[in-house]
Length: 299
Image 1: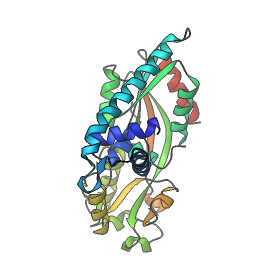
Image 2: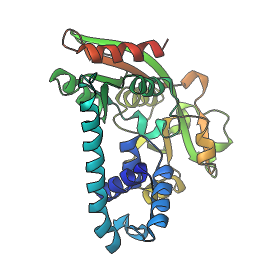
Image 3: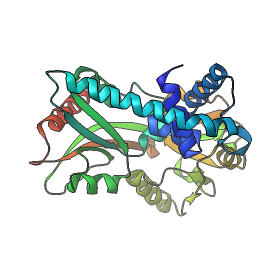
Image 4: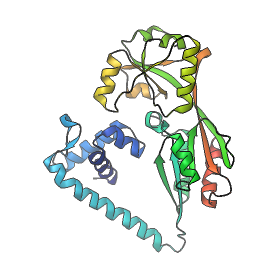
């Protein structure tokens, strides 16, 4: 039995959704599902009813409160152990990420920004780093009111008082089932999206606005569709001819071989820009150290 299994089970019980639990821990839905299955095998009971959208079984309702208590005790033990160290200074940094981990970092934990963040956490034993997931606008508001120290957003900002550092650009691709007519294309042009239902995270603000602009230049409005974040709804959307436009990593092909990952035509290529932002003059020395560490990773 591993702590990670307990954390995933607790999150799924709270959120009633494996995808949302995976998002919370910046891992894949498959990793969460497999961890819970292994935990159930070790315990000898079924914790969740898969036919009822991950509702707790009777055994699950009895066990999850005990799991939560164990996790609480572990957190208190870790905090107490650090406080006993003569070198412990209680530094804490909060960093918020825009929605890109949801569709991209499931498949790319080695993205240089995330790798640098993990490195910093490993090397800075006296610094606790909290990671939040917020939309772009909420990140900027949280920096202004001091709720968070650093944000990673899409695009760039020129607002007074903010330092904005370009981190990277991630390729966006059109993802369709292999039965889709688009799969016959070597590249997808903007005009090929006319009349095609599109699912893309709406808080990818800069990409969303750019896609609308480009489609209108070709004489049509994109057919965006709001699809609930559950496997059944997403599968039905794709089988009906809908496409996803989202960040791409090559290992997605191994995770979902039933899909085609179609690049945009070179003339229509759109990449998702990621920038690090913080408020100059008010950011703590420890947060500034982390910001500079992440910025160096982008070079």
